[in-house]
Length: 313
Image 1 (cartoon, helix red, strand yellow):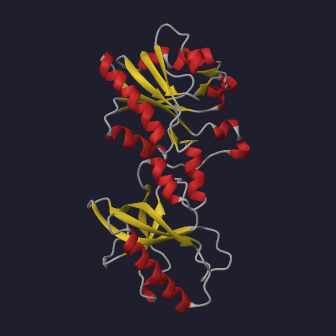
Image 2 (cartoon, helix red, strand yellow):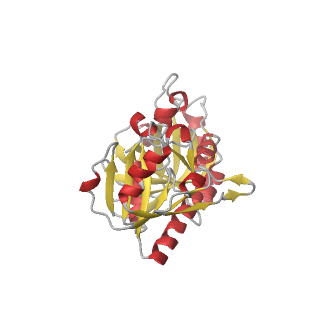
């Protein structure tokens, strides 16, 4: 997959592009709704003999447009998103820097610079896609251009509710992991590296791997979860129980959230290993216990519950 990182203005003559069909959107999470847009683009590209392309943006537009509600954590950080797109056989990915200058372009200027200049022949986007200054461009305005075709993809729902990145983030914050995974279409995952921790787990019989996320992920809410963890260099997957939180039994005012995974039937040193944690089931919120014995008893219960939940994982 060829990746083109574009700023405004960009060097049009420096790009060596064949005609393409492009799916346009931010696509954080690449959830089932996003997959539907990309699937439609691929269908059109194959039918028309075009390259398959995705156009996305970085950072999230809210960083420029909504400073009070800016989104700086992601379900699929850019590098992860690019890897997922490459794995499905996308030919081109246009990563457009979302800056104040870009946000100030009129809808027509955006089309001239980032659709026509890139030899795009088919544009596919969700029904609610907007572009240009103040978001005045939409599917209807795109459809008025004659140099390319536009296809709008309708709303994808689960039950009666639209599948969206916002809803997944809300689900993760509310411990509704089951619903988040349902509309994602897969277990939520975070990539990281195993780093040195406080090593308290081994002293109470439950050694843990302390995971430092590689990117600015939107983490599940503080609590205990049944997870699987892949050792990326080996490709092996192990089952475990994970605590996301601040360890209130040991700390009164710790703010930094940690991710600690206790793997079942595993006793190897894996410091420095790159891993991927897959969140499968929520078990309970993070609690403060009255002492070590109470904590140990609860962790044993959490482990047994996780073993049962992950029986078919």
